[in-house]
View 1 (cartoon, rainbow, N blue to C red):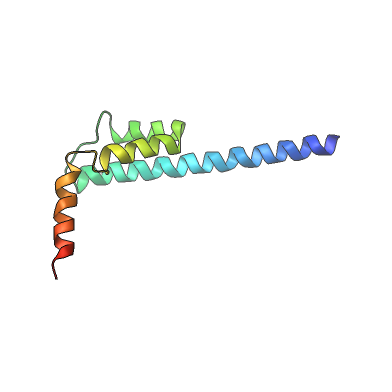
View 2 (view 1 turned 90 degrees about the vertical axis):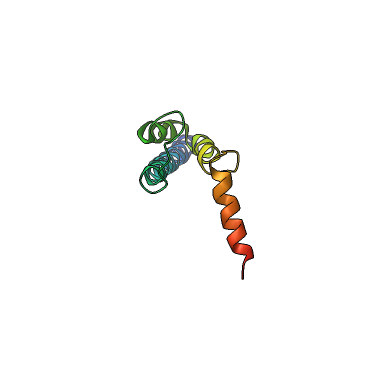
Length: 94
């Protein structure tokens, strides 16, 4: 019986560590992308600063990273649509 408890604890600890690593990795990625938007894209992040987006991603994980992407990189953002259309027009030219 104690063996099953030990295996359960080890599996839970492994799952927790994987989630922790994933949250930190996504937070670093969101922060780096938000900083890149400020430096190269000359666009501000929506709602909060890059640091706050990174902190929110650290707490919320993949869900918050998905919200960040939808707000800053999908065609739901009106500022992204002209860039997307320009790239699509260039791709059609030979």
